[in-house]
Length: 287
View: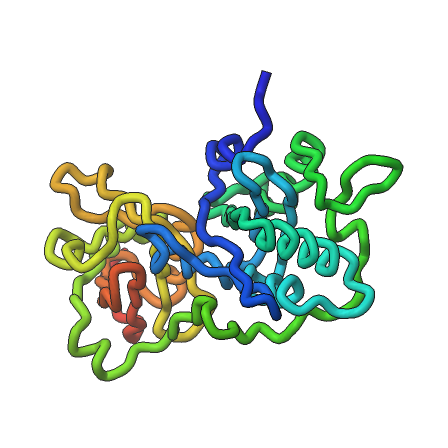
């Protein structure tokens, strides 16, 4: 029989990323742990699941379409009529006042899931199943059954997504001159596999500037479209160099929109968790 604890969430792909703090006036979350920098990338991803845990006990499970950073603004400063925000804010404050720790777990799906021609929203499908299994005590209830935030139909807008002091700031998606000078450049030769599957192998030299196996990596595009959240894999290549795995279909679509089969795409490593793909004019060649 499965024990519905924090560990069960970690086993299905949730990541323990942060802890709630308070200065007696308001609460704020703080990313911690050895991968705090990489986990910052999770804060602005849409269709994310999150959970609050007290020790091993899962107290709350929720979903946000707007991103963790924006959603948690409502928990820090709940508005009138926002039942979920008010309830969770009070519960977090109560536990912190007792000296207990409240952890934040986040789940952002990066696998490409499709049914026929349709993309599947794993977070949306998983939320109901998790709440039914865990029965988190801080979730609202209907006929003594825990319900989702959507079912509560909160109408008020969340607080502005400006992080207060002590909360993680949003990383800049643009490349400065200093970035350009320090960036490690590499090329993606768009043979059939890379072109159609969206694979990125930066190679041994550029891989030295990227993070550890399993860390999140954000793939940015020079034309400014929405970045792709993926993961660093250092076991796929025999020499331990990086392969970017996750949401590769979106990367392939971008390759196919701007390049021909057989072209090369130039790229830059901006920091250990960000790669920028550069757009160059469509050239002849390839087939």
